[in-house]
Image 1 (tube, rainbow, N blue to C red):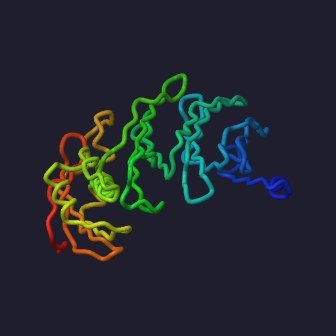
Image 2: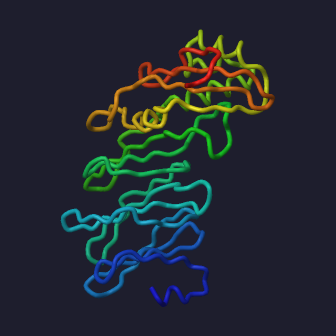
Image 3: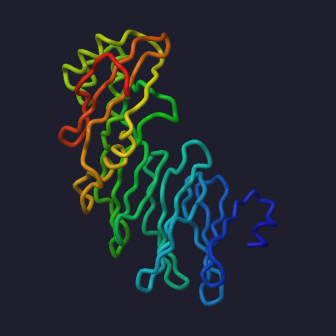
Length: 273
């Protein structure tokens, strides 16, 4: 590690652990980096894809006679995490068991159980979004990876349609001048009411009811491929919405979970408590 730190090649080394368990990742902003580990007192090294990012070790597990290193690929910027790499190490040998770089951003990985990893991120369909700044676009795209003896396999992929996703899509449809394109995120009466209530403009202001965040997080786990039940039952979420530029009247939009996603079901003048 000390030798790497003295390098003038713009390498970025990061160390984890100590002694026989020490792991070092090395990379610059390139397609490929390296991982080093200790085997019987000797350093071993293997190439690893980093996809023009940087590796961060998320977990280090012992699986029988294999050691599993699970890394996040960090973009180094506002895109956040963009992918994941898993490496199985047996002595001096390293085998890549996962390389997931699906063209998404703001990704997060969590272990659902001993063999399943749920990855979430932002990979939105092409449509008009009402609140389209980078900080505020919806996330909720999901990938479920299952570990097998030959490596991880993708069990399923979906876009979770939570209340905020529905809100953003509805406002985007109004901005586009084609509110009917929100039929997948709002009932027809809600579309008609929203189109009549909100005039043309450039920007929106909004705030949510207090349960919005917990319902958004719970929606990620309301997937029939995941083991167990979602942590909380669905409950209506409300958003107070108004035009910001130019300033306009305020309405409360109610969203309810219908089927496997959320729909705007009511739009009426007013404010949240």
